[in-house]
Every structure is written in C-alpha cells, then in structure tokens.
Length: 191
Length: 191
Image (cartoon, rainbow over all chains, first blue to last red; front, side):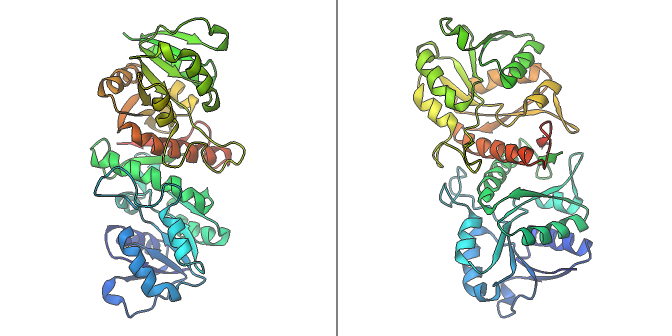
C-alpha cells in the first residue's frame, strides 16, 4: 500500500483522497494551515490551482526529492478563457518538473472532472485516468492506486504529452462552461 | 440539401462521403486525377494528409472563395511521433485559414477515427464531431450535415480551438499506435 500526501483540500483533492482511500491506501490531506507539517507520502499530489503551485513548491521543494509528485493542474488563463498561461511549447507539468528536478513528476487527473473520479464512471464507461511521465516506476505506482479504486489507468506517454493532456482538459472545461456537456460528462476513453 | 466536394479519396474522405450521402446530401469525391475539375460544392472537405494541403490550396485557392472549407488534418510529425509540424501557438487550421483568407475555414472530423464515422458510434456513445470555427453559419451548415447522418455535432468554439482539437487527436493517435486503445475507440464525448 502506498502512503499519499494530498496538498489541497478542494473538490479535486477530496476526490483523489476518496479514490486513494477506496483502494486501501493511507492518505494525508494538507492545506495552507499545515504549512509547518512536512509531507510524509511516497506520492504527493499537487491539488492546488496552478497559480498556487509556485508558492507550494517554494515552501516544500526540499521535501519532494525522490517522491512521485502528481501534477493535476490546468493552467487556464481565466482572464481570457482563450488559452493557457504556460508557454505554447511547454506545460504546467514541464514547468513543475523544471522547478523541482529531484522529484519524479507525473501528470494525471487533470483530464478528469471530480465527479467522475468519485463515481468511477463517465457515461457508460469506467473513468480513465491518463498518466504521462518520464519515470516508468512512478507511473506504475500511480496506476496501481487508480486501478485499486476500480478506475482505469492508461499510460499516455512521456511527460511531454502533458501538453496534449492540458489542451484536452482546457477544451473539456470550455465545453462544460459553454454547456455543451455537463460537469459529470466530457471525454470518456473507449477501448 | 448541401452539395459537398471532398478532396481526397482515402479512408477519411470515403467515410465523410458516406456520412454526407447518408444524410441525403450530394457528394463529389475528387483526387489528384481530377486536378482539372473545379470543385462545385458549397462545402469543400480537405481530406488529404496535411503535407499535401499546400499543393491542393495552391491549385484550388481561387475556387474556394466564400466556400465552407473543412480542415480535417492532423499535422503530426511522423519522423519523431513526438509533436506536430505546425508552430506550437498555431494549428493546421490557422495555417490554412491564413493561406485562403476568402474561404470560411472550419476544423472538424480530425478527432474522429474513420471507423467511428462509418459506424456512428464509439463505445456506447453516438460519435460526436467537434467543430471549431469563426463563422457561425459555416459551423451550422456542417453541423446539419453531421446531424442528418445520425451523428452528434458539437460546437467547440472559435477556430483558435483547433489547436486543442489537434492536440487531442494527436494524443488519441499516439494511444492507438501504442495499443492503449483500438482504432475504433478513443475519446467519446459524453454529455
């Protein structure tokens, strides 16, 4: 069993905590009031909005060496709702990996709406968590956590694919915001 | 009923011709052997690989003024299979729109594998065609063609969203090439 630290107690942090607990893993859920408490998990989930990531990393970078750091963020420009705030040839995950080079960064959960993580399904399909990263063991560890909760995990390739995962999620959010789909719908991965 | 010209007689050209005919529209299917035959459709589908688009446009740009030009391409760098050949802050659709400014360019069908257009379904869901573009009437016309064939059409926003549609399709193709999904699976849009 893995021990998982989740930084952020919002909608997504709670959904991922529930998913991890369902699979029998131990979870610590930390927010800004726990700034003095070092993370103890083997897996650390950054479940804060992207604009808050830099502050979290500045505070905790030294605690993240060797750990599997899960970036779930979508760096959407909410001022324009017409693009992302990261450079077009980069991604939030790439920026995070550059900021904490000793961590084993994976991109995951950013394409899943919280409700579909909690329910385990999207339409008629089992919810699929797409996972990108350069460390195969890190991806396998997280895939195990996802599968233990009854969801599907799919290896989406190297960390460079975070760029496409963030594009997909941005599109999905614009479709939901525009009421073309619901916040429990979106892109289901069919085999 | 619309009259539709399809340039390219491959897998996708044939699937879109079948879809259009199913809805009662008239279709002309043209390939390189028809270079001397001007397109007569109100809608012109560029169903050639992206590297062939420039030559087609050079030959037919004068015939496309005012027409709804449907870009279905995915400008994948097949040498590396690790990105697209268009600039990171652009898209194939944006490049095409710049090349034929008098045409009403929409991005569509690039996120659909041919088999799911022919069958009308993906997993348990009806196949959805995501359509991006800056001309509302052009999108409505194409949406009508898609709906007449029993598929769903969803307005994915302005032509700028082609960037995300191309990212999604690239990711989907890498997943199929990596045998994570089949060529009749992929991203189903659930409401």
